[in-house]
Figure 1 (cartoon, rainbow, N blue to C red):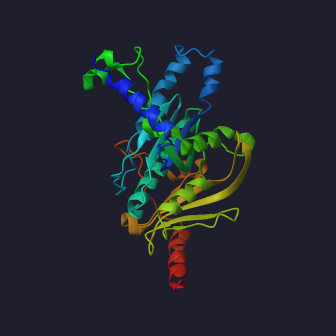
Figure 2 (tube, rainbow, N blue to C red):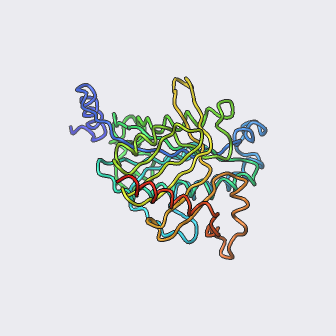
Figure 3 (cartoon, rainbow, N blue to C red):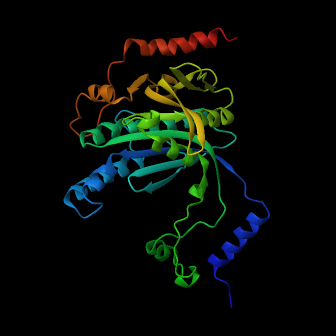
Length: 327
């Protein structure tokens, strides 16, 4: 009698773990969490069928369509040919991508612009619905220690997998990228720390591990001090600036679910002409996002192209001046 494939895989992964043969993979994670959704559930006695909760399903669907997809603001020249995995968990969406030893800075910058753009799009929409959005970027490693689960009846049908190959009729949801993902854990813990620790509604944050992971795999392309209360994270191609992420607040977290780290609150970002062909400034705090999005274009897509604040070009000139005096 042939042993079902699923059982063979479980034995193989068990042996691999016993031999300490599992290998960690560097990765980044972005966690988007809808704030205040639990309050709505509590008001409705945690009954999903109540009318007030059902109305919010459209909101969650919009969050999924934006956060789990590749939709970008009108006018963006960004294309993202890298692979990442998405995990939808209740009212949150996690995205994780592996980081290679030979990352190309332009592709990484494009990917990060996509993640930042999604916060820009979703934050004001959720705010108008009486909800909110907290987004956290973190870095770290992931490791796979078990077979990847099949998931659903639909997957079984499409893969033509016999139910005999399932284990005791159990269909595990067990994506390799999230089995043990420290970057996801850090992002989740930081976001869940909440107002008590200074993680406020409507903002996007990045953890020090995010910078460390980028710096390790993009040598010579990351410029960041982090010592000051406010400052910039620069991603360059070694000579030209590609993306500048500006933070306006530094938060020290100590022993939050056994995590101690430094987190930076992002106020805006600049996409430089070396990446997109033109200089673009995008605010990420709700007050300026709402002012920035003056109107929705007739086709229903938000146009992010607006006149640049005077200081944005000075930021790019600041980098050119820094590079000129470096050599």
